[in-house]
Image (cartoon, rainbow, N blue to C red; front, side, top):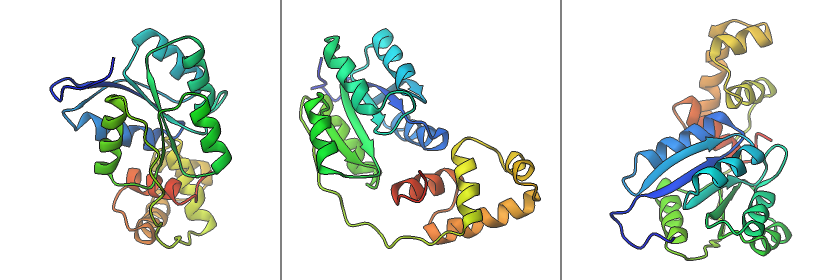
Length: 206
């Protein structure tokens, strides 16, 4: 059932294989009175199982997921006649992929590089029964990260703590912190979650 009453919270499931980005998106939606995050998933199969069990109004799904991608999740939902509306988030826009996504029953294909406000507005539009395909905004000039900064951000995206990264790379925790700070400055952010999200949006992490 679509949400046409602003007093009704939109039940939402989030699926993304980057733990920090996923947690950041969940925190964003939980901070808005219009949404209720009912579950999170790190892969397509887990997301689909949760959708079958919980029947959320929205499934906000990354295009690239382990085992089955966001489009495959949407195809399964349509095949099984489930009511959940699927929103694909992606760092990339490819005409053929977008076409395949909508053919699979996706209700919105949104770039990850967008403001929190515009993302929430798009999700609410989908919850009201609309289909959303906005164009990509202009991207900021790409940041140039060193190989070490990229490696540390990738481990951060996988949910590793500073001390865990230090052990994995055989460097000190202070060195990890310094590399992260340099990455923050280049990406124009001030914390780990924002750095990972910005790096993904700019295609710096794959």
